[in-house]
Structures are given as structure tokens and as C-alpha cells.
Length: 236
Image (cartoon, rainbow, N blue to C red):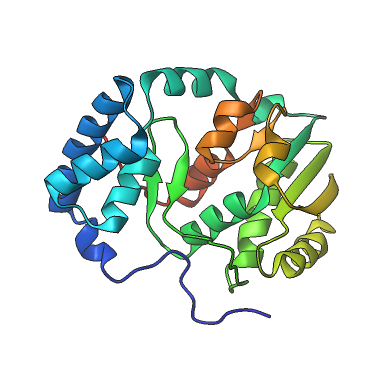
């Protein structure tokens, strides 16, 4: 049940939104937003104020919001990051939709952002709807290949119950997982975010989860290196 001719996270206006000239403006805007949130301002209020000043589009504002973090958040997230080389024989917990969608965007040649905390994020909005696309199986395999090389014991994948087609994605993941040696436990649950709070070896780029989990892994960055894909930096 694939959605043909779909390019995950693609919007035609992105060529203009993220041109070289636009990126220069976004870097200035991100600098302003980070200064404000470091001073204690709310991220949404800061991004609205700065976005209005620089006349940013909604996509541009979202790219800034997803890219920035306070100095304290960056330090704490970096301290909790675990290398793939330290996962041998261990279990990992995966924020399923968050992780797979980023890899789908990567395979679709969509826009990805290198963020201040070292994560790779996209602009694909889930909003309760999801469709399997031709790149989905390759995205799953990309993730599983990384985990197999890391010699993990088990991958526990959490999928959001309210999201459409979560059952179909679970089935596809289970089918693909038969080709790999690690154990696979795929669960469809109601509150993925809170389930991952206080957990070890979490795979996600969700900022709230990163701030609450005990440790996290960053395989998307490794995938970027292996595929040679390019990301946009809107904050340097």
C-alpha cells in the first residue's frame, strides 16, 4: 500500500525559502532567537518576534525553531549522547515515526537541517497522518543496517497509535526485520514521547524527548555520512 510519486517533506517553495541568500538571513534570525531563549524567553514567542522582523515564511520559521537550542540544552544533550560503537549487546528504543520519516526525507532528496545539538531534523509534518511511500522500505533497511553494524541485542520500536497506517508500518518493519540478526519488538502505543522519558539508548531527534531521556543515539548523522547527503545549516 504505497503512496506513489510522493516526495516526503517536499514543498515547491523550498527552493526560494532555502536559497543561499535566504540561508544568510536565516542564520542571522537564528542568532537572534538563540540569544533570546538563552535569556529565558519562550521559543515560540522569540521565533514569532524574530520571524516577523525578518519577514520569514512559515517554513523558514520552522527551520529556525527546529535548529536552535539554548547553550544549556546543547551541553546537556551532548553529554547524554552515546556513540554507536558503544551499543554492542545492548537494547535500543526507537521513536519510530520520528526516525523513519527523517530517513525517508533523506532518500527523497528533501531538505534536512544540521541542528545546534548535533541532530539532523526535517520539516515533514506528521499531524496524525502517514502514508507508506516507495522510499519507506529503504529507510527501514538503512536504520536496521546501522543497528546491525552496532551489534545491538534488541530494537524496541515505538509507533504512535493515533497516527494513520501505524499498523501497516509495523508490518513492513517486521517483514524487513527478518533479514537481520537482532531481536525486534515493535509496539503501537498511545504516548511514545512519555514512554521514552527516563529511558536509555533512545533513538530520536525530538527535542522534548532528548531533554528527558537518560541517553540517546544519533544514527541519522551516520546515515548522512554514509550516503553523502547534504544538510542545511541555518545557524552558523
